[in-house]
Image (cartoon, rainbow, N blue to C red; front, top):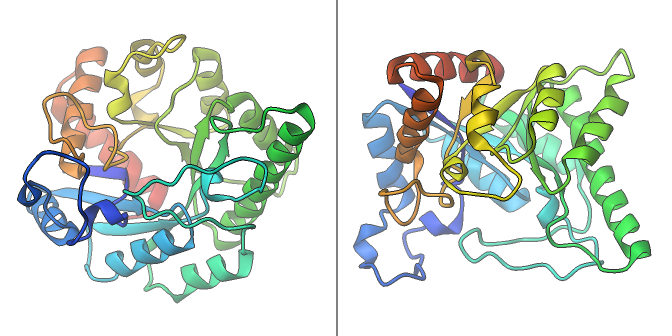
Length: 296
């Protein structure tokens, strides 16, 4: 079996009436119920990840329809935190909904209202400096607000004893500093994964040293200046790797235009090639990793 540890079937892109920006016939874009059915038939389990309250709530609703194999993570993505300092780009495939601040009690109640074992993580949370203010003063305030939102959600994960799914874009050094500062408190213990890791070998080693898992998805098929995905995979022990799709984004080569959890097999194949081990071994260990981290 395979476990897609980071999917977004809770996004509008998988609604029955979603009108995709594509020239492909609409019927090629199956709604989420059909996608989930096909995944479970092919022994692919799914964790749908929230990016704001609405998509978190949707992830929980979806998870509660299934006895096993479909789970939810809830959280406020840094891009969905409206700091008032930068123009926010609307993502139609997500069904974007922005929040002025992280509502700790509302998210906690959502987690507690779910059936036992359905909410398996807090995320995706973190830092994202891709869209940022241009002036120094506004940039510092922008970063400060993102860090505050992140720390609140780390506290929620600690209170609920749930692992964390980190999102980080162009901000790894700041995220590492926040986590190191948190770990100075001996009472602070957190488990988690840096999802869709795009960083340097040095940053990779910092996350591994802190005990985190590393998530790899279809971005490993791309070329990004300054990033060596092959070396990152080689330097990550198999026992610390999680596989994911981040669907509907980052479709692997020669797969469907709109990614879905079945595309996770291509990530497994690529990791197996790089590490020179067989597909079955990567599938076995990454599945074990996901079950242990998320208590599936």
